[in-house]
Image 1 (tube, one colour):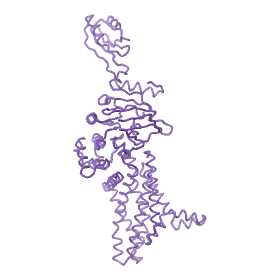
Image 2: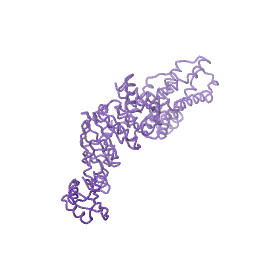
Image 3: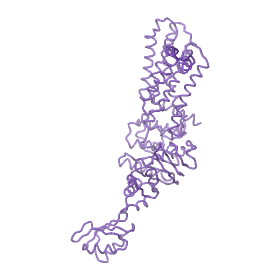
Image 4: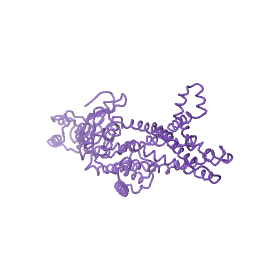
Length: 317
Length: 247
């Protein structure tokens, strides 16, 4: 378990992380979202025992990271931002080096390194110097490094940043495969990633924790959530009126109006689902519904709602 | 336990980092060429007609002044530039372990370069009958001197992510440590400064200690001197690194 309590980090006068508290249980993939400079990396570095907090406490599996970073780091696999690696080493030499640092000696060390090379699909590049690797292989090598001692906690700072869609997919699949018996904390500003692999999402902005939720629940906070777009064969004026009479509908907007087909947007009063009532209305009048689309809510919108306001100095949440 | 295994793993990595790049070969070749050039051509090893290595060891402080910072400059600056320092210090390696490992590797490397000068004492032995005790003592002094320079370079390397800055700072500090006890400089100083100040500044210098050992005088105080300069510089390195990582 990761336990973060009232974590604060100041760099001079600037407060990078401002009173952040949360807990993460085993089996969770936590997506750490936020604009650049929001404090994601600083928070992760403090959990990893690289930066000491100005105040507050971090515990990993019951070990106080500030008091005993060495013991805590044995529980942690950490992938820093921008995948720093010893460029002149080969993949194999690098992973052997890390295995040795992580306490494997002799034949054990080689076995461990070989197992990780297999697991992370690095066999084809194992003798290549790291500086000659593609970004995808580079990222995988850094990911392999985090896994070598089978840690309980993985901290991944922007694991898919700068990869092409195929490479992203591979890295994501690797993360998903590892997720079951570990805690994974990954920071990102790729929202689709959060939807794809995270079971919990936190949004941090200006050093403060703004949202802590499940990705599904978070989407419901999107402005357009459950807005219904309906395409119906009906007279324009009657359609507008009939749908507006549904009690949960706040507003009906005509998107396009033909001689027979109407495309209308129904905005719910309080994010309720409108589809069933809309179909009832249409079928009662024998109107043909040719298309019906309910907005599932977009994380982008939520992300923007929460973080953009900060730039102009106003606060939500 | 961790101290040993981590230190050894890091030392091995650093050692192969030297030999995986042209640095090691260039350094060794230049060191040997310059050492030979100064000994034979500038100091006139043959013309002096003495079977000793004075003219060889005389140049080491000056050779090291330039060459050791070149070996040391990447030790931390490179880790910081590449960001691998973050990787290193989040894998339960402590700054002390990393410093020990890097110091061991770089010092062993300088030791290797020094050992490769063996044809020079062999020449002296072939031409005459040198005092082998003095030669061994000279090598010990030179090795300790290299270690002290290295610790200075390690410290300046930890200060910056820029290897050039690290190099220049190390040369300047090294130059101070040479010149503080260099005869012409102390003579100049003693014209206006009180004697205790001149002696005090000179006591910081490599030179009196190095020269004494070069003459074959193995005094515990000289060992203590080199150990404390090296130790102090490593301590400062630890302070700088600890400051960054909070340990």
